[in-house]
Each structure stands twice: as structure tokens, then as C-alpha cells.
View 1 (cartoon, helix red, strand yellow):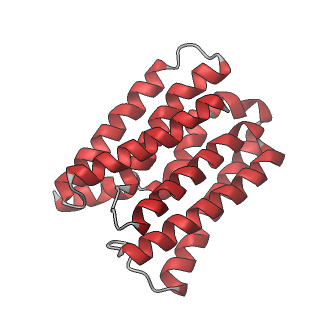
View 2 (cartoon, rainbow, N blue to C red; view 1 turned 90 degrees about the vertical axis):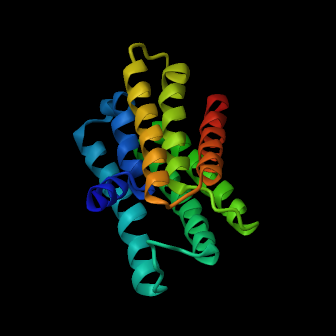
Amino acid sequence: MKQFLFVLSFLTHPVFIPLYAVIIYHPLINKHGNMAMLLMAFWIFFGSIMLPFIYFVKGKGMDLKNPDFKDREAIFKSYALIYLVISVACSFLTKELVWFFVGLSFLNLLLFLLALIKLKASWHSATWAFLAVIALVIPYNFGFVDFELKAIIVTCITLGVSFLRLRQGAHTTFELGMGLAAGALAGSTLIFL
């Protein structure tokens, strides 16, 4: 059971959120063709997974399974910058994803500020809450219909991820609540952009 929970936690890790976002944003970026989708997936994989992994694990020697507050500060600060850079790249490739990455950068900035004052918000629940709110914002901002099923699925995954992290003992309910609130706040700002 412990290995199963670990695999689920790994598959729902925040570094994969941009890849899952490509699925949610598929109706918007599909018009650019498969090449743009593949290029965007490569940018996201390289920029938000490979480079940080090499930097944090090989360069800094961080224990990513149990980072302390200094490590969390470095992670959130780095991801805020990475997502800003990816948003600039998106402005040339797929303009629809620009504000998503700006919002994700804002979320990591919020988590960085919480880590600065020694509050450990759940990064898992924060990013999934962000994605759940985004699934609600897309139809509002772009006038899509029949998008409710995606929003319901992502919301159920968000609740499942939060329960999973609680069950693993990785976070308290307060830390999960802070993560959910930070993610919802960052995602809801995109309504106005």
C-alpha cells in the first residue's frame, strides 16, 4: 500500500502540472497544430522537470523527498522564475498559455512567501487547486461550453491528492488548507486577465 501511495504521489507531483495543463488547455492550443503541442510539451518537460532536477539534486544536493524551509524557499523561488521564462516562450509559441504560466509563477511566489515565514503549505494541493480553478476559468474567459466534466475531474483529483498527502503524513490539514487556498487565490486572479 505504501508503494502505491508513493506512485500516486509521484504521478501527481507539482512538477508535472504544466504537462497536465496542456491537456486542459488542449481546445485552445489545438489550433496551432501537433508540432506546437510537441514543442510546448518539450519546453515544459525540459524547463520544469529536467533542469530543476539536475540543479536541485546534482548541483545543490537537496533531498527533494523532505526539503527543509531553505530548500522549499529555493524551490519555489526557482520555479517562479522558470515559469516566468516559460511564459515568455509561450508568447511566441502558444499565447493562450502565457497567463497560465504567469499564474503558476504567482502561485510559487505565494508559496515562497509562506516558506519565508516558516509556513509549510502543501505544494501538491496548491498546484492541483490552481489547476482546478483554471479548469473553471477557461470556459469563463474563452466561452467554451461542455467543459464542466474536466473541471469536475480535476476537482476530484485535487481532493484525492490532498487526502493522499494527509494519509501519507506529509502534511497536516492546516498545511493542506494553506496550499488549497494559495492555489485557488492564484488561479482566481486569471479571471481578470
